[in-house]
Amino acid sequence: MTDHWQTGGCLCGAVRYTLYTPPKWTALCHCDSCRRAASAPVVAWMGFAPDAVDWSGERQFYKSSPHANRGFCPTCGSQMSFESDRWPGEIHLYGVSLDTPEAYVPQLHCYTDEHLDWLRLSDDLPRFAQSADSEPAGPPSDRP
Image (cartoon, rainbow, N blue to C red; front, side, top):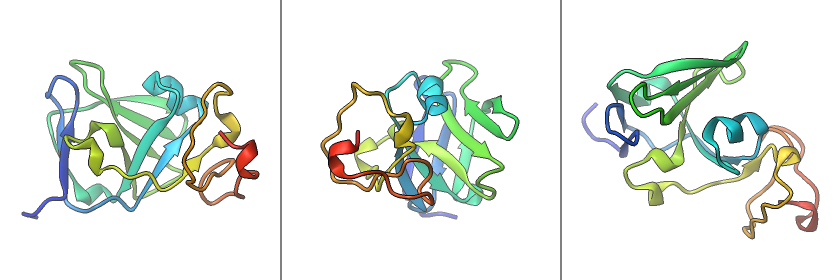
């Protein structure tokens, strides 16, 4: 592969990636596990086929549940990736780890049933109580 879509990496630059395709999907995740892993109120994810990502530098992995691994930079600790048996054949990367984070465009909110009550987002993106293949969340007045 020669042409690429975007590049990105960790805070210190020890772990880098090149993306050869745009993401399959993007989502703002409100689940407790993602929020805690990132120490953030919401996490911007992008989903890719593993062969669309070329890594330089070695990630280390933390098994955050029996079926999920979270990749991070062993030097600076930046969270880099998420892989799970729930989504086989996909790797999820943090949208804000792009060198040009403005290239990240969220498509939806997921796991809004776990959102923080104090977080209010005023976009009109679709909201899902669980994953994007679940039932849509309530009317806009009931959404984060």
